[in-house]
Image (cartoon, rainbow, N blue to C red; front, side):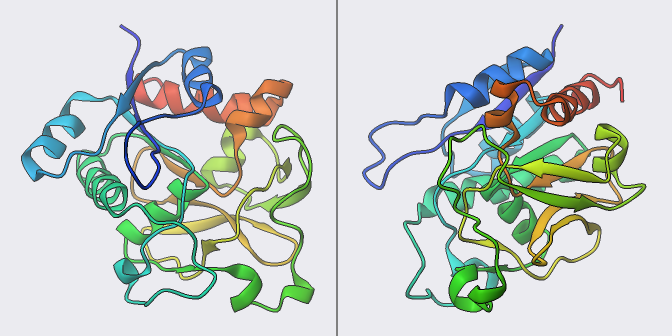
Amino acid sequence: MNPLIGIVTSTEIEQETYFTSTDNVNAIIRAGGIPILLPYYQHEKTIEEIASKIDGLYATGGYDIDPTLFGEEPHPKLGTIIPERDHFEIALMKKVLVLDKPILGVCRGSQTLNIALGGDMYQDIYSQKNSRELLQHQQKAPNKHGSHFVDVKEGSLLNRITGETRLRVNSRHHQANRKVEKPLQISARASDGIVEAIESTKHRFVLALQWHPENMLVANDLASEAIFKGFIAACSGNE
């Protein structure tokens, strides 16, 4: 049977609808997984049961993250937060990590993974770093367009999966990981120093990217295809 992949959904403040993009769903299907859209459960036993039943977790992009989760108060440039999603996503990640099941995170999912393992983040890179030194991380181009490059750490999981030490990626974020704690390591950075990928050195497959490979897959980007195939292979036990 193809692996069951839990996809963390998005919602608006009113929480009238759970949703995710068709690019997210299609990326999992294309790589051989069965996508399961997850609403925000709040009870620990239910979250534990979900973690036990899925074969892998895909943590998607979305709104900003509550800074009190990493000991800060809201910056003026902080955007919309959905506290129920923050709680559910981080709690589920912790359960999945204990079970050593694969995790793939994109954009927001990269940040929640880092927070789940004790790291922190910039609430707004343009206010909290020297903006004159930064690239354009909120691209004014189609979602599938790779707008800048990232340098990939040799020997990292990301390097092994893609076979590349430099990738062209898209960019739609104003937040980014800052302090990264073990067992995570930084496996890719942009030329301006922004952390673009993190991964675990302890788990079978835990990889999180600041960009959106699901969008670039639409343009048949080979690295994006390799990332999703590698994730699903790990979820199938074939890594």
